[in-house]
Amino acid sequence: MPKIIAGNWKMNLSLEESHTLCKALDAIKSTHEIIIFPPFVWLNQMTNSTKNIAIGAQNCAAFDNGAYTGEVSAKMIAQTKASYVLIGHSERRKYFNEKNASLILKVKQALAHNLNIVFCFGEDLEQRKKGEEKNIVKEQVLDVLKDIDPQNYNKIILAYEPIWAIGTGQTATVEQIEAIHTHIKNVCKEDLNHVFKILYGGSCKPSNATQILSTKNVDGVLVGGASLQYDSFHSIIHAV
Ligand code: PGA
Image (cartoon, rainbow, N blue to C red; front, side):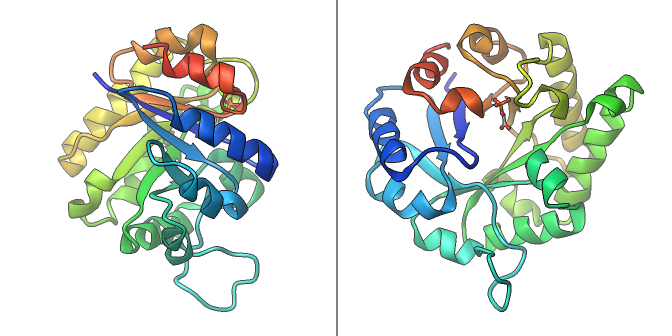
């Protein structure tokens, strides 16, 4: 079964490094869908130099156009020929105070410009310690998706990223991953009548990728740190 292997480069890599890595990834023969999320400013170059992998932006504005200094609209992203946008990453929620109300607008903007979406959700450590994770993730997902036209659901992929596992080296156990993925698949089936694909993200690396990717209800992975080097990302792509 083909999986989705996505790399979130965050605010890393020079133009030259990005170009070299994208070209090398584009040459990999794989049945899996590979998506790379480079920084905004490299999008055009990356879409022009690749044909087998998908390219996406790491964020988009909640508005169509106008006086929003520093923002980049979904319309502009679509013009770079990028086909995806990442929305709701925990770093955006934490450092840029993104809340559900603006995430809904971002999802609508992306869909209006025919972009596919990887929508991130996940609990923090305190919420998990209190045993609140299932309610938190349900709210994060349903609050946004219930506002979206069901005709567009097939353009949305979900990504479960427990905040305590991102960039910490601490991966969620397969039991924890399976529990949340199954819970969200069931909740979406019941409330929205749609089964979404769900990626796992949070310290995914070559040593744990096979185990994560063979976990029930895991449709792929969203990789941060380990997507910045060809060797580690290549190993993850070949882990299944
Ligand atoms: P990480 O990041 O793989 O470095 O933990 C994952 C992410 O933030 O998408």
